[in-house]
Length: 616
Image (spheres, one colour):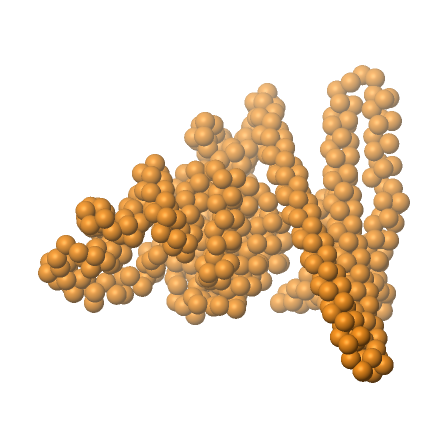
């Protein structure tokens, strides 16, 4: 199964800690509950009872929260009303009762704001943001997270980091991977400074690894996922040890490292079977089957895939069921049993056609087209291919819209940052002017004018040097932005031209008079191969990364011009897809080029090509 991102939940309770404390606390809390009078101490006792049993006996916890609210209202104890309504909101959130959860959380939010308790206000607002997120109201969730972050930044860096990771997850759901990566790395940096709970850092590392996987930066993904696994191993967190082992296996699979992928999938399977983690077990079995199908061992593949499918069905994991059915169909197709394969593709299409995941539906149509063609049903194959193309175009258009929106958000954020910098510079200049005026008054009123003038001259020289240095740094930052913009423009232009070329070729094949289309294709080919675009990019690149090409040639004299181009694009940390568009080759070609480059540079499997390039 494909890796999934873990959502960072901001809550008052840690399940593992509650379970460890429950046996010691519950009896004393119940005894105190029976003996308390109806006062604020009883309200606090009810809150502790709720916290202790929420995850083990949620119905009893609900009753305690209701009694907590009734008593708080009876005693006109506003803080208790704020606590109890939050507890009721959290219960309904866990139970999936979204409307009830939102009602009680809004009540709690109002009380905490009235009380001026901004820490609890931020906590409740974070829960409301998460509700928006679960309902797909991503823009609303982002607005709330921004307010939460502004509150936590002054109150708690730890909670700030957790909430920032929550916000990053929303950007991931919107397809804004670069923004999500930036925010999760910032959350990770803050967690490194406060480091209250090690598993939170592991969660952040895993989220970065998952985002890099979605960006197809599989080597970077492995780096972060393995760091997360080391922490989960240390904490003996078996659920996430199993889940992350699956994620690491997926990254190795995408890099074509099937032996390593199998090793991690088997580790995940062992952990999930030992500790009864059914979803992870089903994913591991399906992934092992996928690897065996990839290497042509179809009978072994089908054995594992069917076992995984049964677990997914028992747990009613719809997305996993559909993906595994597609994998089983592909395995039968690989064996040459087209009729059997179509049975599974039909099941996926029937199930996903109304409200299923569009990616699984798209894949099912594509694979069934191949099965129909192999079985000789040419008309059916053409119809399935048509449906696949419609869905694929829809996904492509959605992805492009997400990328354009992401660029707009980045642009607006940078514009705000520039305005802040300008305002800060104006303030600095006014402060410097005030200091100079003050110094002048002191000099005029003292008999040490000549001596102090020397000091003043040195000070001014230092200020000029500082301003000059800041100007150089600002120019370099601007050039970096120009370089990135130019690279993205180049990638986008080549991608659009390649799409036009493919459409023209399709039209050419279907039209009798193809002279005009041939001329269009020649024009596009000329533009795709235009070296002026690369020369302009290289000029920007050399201004930002001075002596990079010279360093590479001195250290690796046998590197070809094409390999030097690839190294330059890797230095910018672009995705494989963006590099492929700029160089006008396929993503598979990029994989092969990276592999050949690793061999030429004598990089071992344990070393990272990306890290080497960034160090040059």
